[in-house]
Length: 172
Image (cartoon, rainbow, N blue to C red; front, side):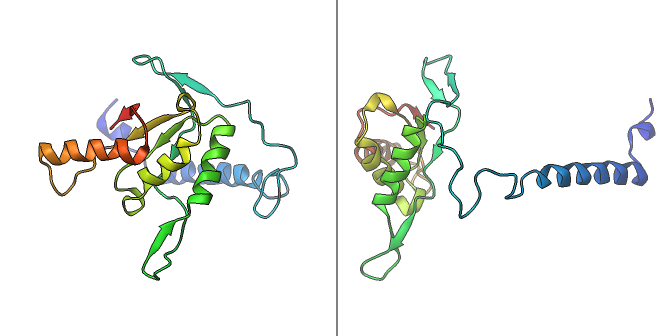
């Protein structure tokens, strides 16, 4: 087969795009509110199961990790009392974490720089209310401005303090 045979002509390309568009449209038609048991503004028709999370086992550590992890980059915020910026809505974060854990999520991913530097502290407050064996914490070394060894160690120690844990399960 020559190089020219591997090229796609315009007609073949448009056929593939047309078929893909038709398939996507058909799939989305099945996602309409009439066919969807959970849609905006409506409660679920049945209770959300709390016993159906899928887990994978980390071969190196043996951790049983929920297939669905919780990214803590966008915690809900409220206007700051002083009128300058926002603060994390800790009550909402607590509710979100409680709901996630109740439904089998055990992997929480955060960073010292998420939500203007408040994510680890807020995540730590919410998770501290649960037994440590119920969750796994992943955080990151995020020293973008000062790459010194001392600054990296200080950031590492601060993560332990803010997360209120004695160990970090995954340090990225």
